[in-house]
Every structure is written in C-alpha cells, then in structure tokens.
Image (tube, rainbow, N blue to C red; front, side, top):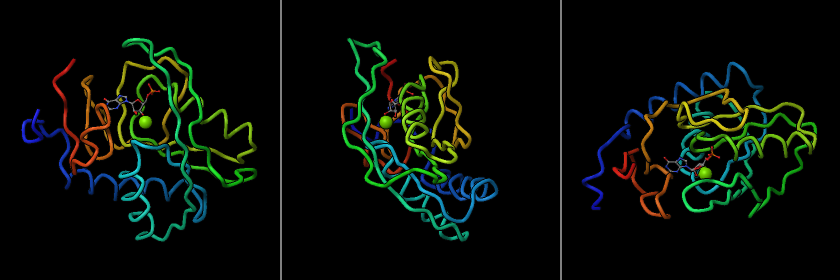
Length: 177
Ligand code: IMP
Ligand code: MG
C-alpha cells in the first residue's frame, strides 16, 4: 500500500497540539525533575516531541529507553513479555514516567510497571500517545492519554506494521482488520 492511501486519523498539527496540552497535564501532576522510561521502538517519535513540549513549559526530565517484546503465537499474543534492551539508569527512589506509543491489551505496560516498581521506583505514572478501549487483558491504566483510537490497526508517528510506516509524520489507519 502506498503511503498516500493511508487515511489520516490524526494530522501532524493535531498531534502537536495534543502533545502541548498533554505536557501541561503532566506538569500539573509531576515535579520539575523525573525520569522518563520510553518504550522502544514505537514511542521514539512521541517521546522526542513530548520532551521538547515539556522543556517549553519548564520541566526537566531525564530520559532512558527500554525495548520490550511480547511474543505472539499466530495472531494472538501469548502474553509473555521479555526485555530486549534494558535501561541503564537506577530507578530506585525516582519519580518515573513510562512513555509508550499505544495501550492495547496492556500486557507490555503492566510488565514495565511491575518491573520498575520492583526495582524501587518511588512513584510511577504512565503516558501513552494512543489508547484502544475495549481490548484490555491486563489491569493497567494510563494516567495521560493523547488520543483514543477506534479498533483499527494504526501506523505512523513511530508506530509500525512489520517495521514499516514509522516515519509517517501523522497517524493513519491501515485497512487490515
Ligand atoms: P499491548 O501489550 O497489547 O498493550 O501492546 C502494545 C504494543 O502493541 C504497542 O506498544 C505496539 O507496539 C503494539 N500495537 C498495538 N496495537 C497497535 C496498532 O494498532 N498499531 C501498531 N502497533 C500496535
Ligand atoms: Mg510498542
């Protein structure tokens, strides 16, 4: 499918505006300094825009990255999550904001949240760019949500289909479900 055919769900401008507002929502809840744990690869673009929006309103986060993989048997997830690349920062006694691209079943974020809690994070919040309602299999809630999306497979702005479309500056819907 050529990129021109992917219908736009959220444009570049809509994303930028929402992220500016989201950073204000985060600033009301979090201290000036905290640690962001950004979950790769899907959240790299969101994280880079979010931290610049945070800077503009006076926040000063530290950043680290973690790559998690959840294994799928056919089309259904087995629910097993493993660490492919870990953070190098010590989270003990830190205020941590986990940043991810999309909250679907919640397994990835549930795993990340438990892991960082076990390592002694003082306080944890979760920010996601997108949330798909009605798909949750794990008990996890995002504190900050950019947009709620319909039950479609979405790509662009960091999100992929077989590692394609991450470079799109907008969020689009693939017509595969
Ligand atoms: P969860 O553990 O089911 O919540 O899975 C979340 C992960 O699945 C996200 O971090 C994405 O990498 C991926 N994912 C879920 N839905 C979509 C989608 O619509 N487009 C692209 N990736 C998705
Ligand atoms: Mg992901």
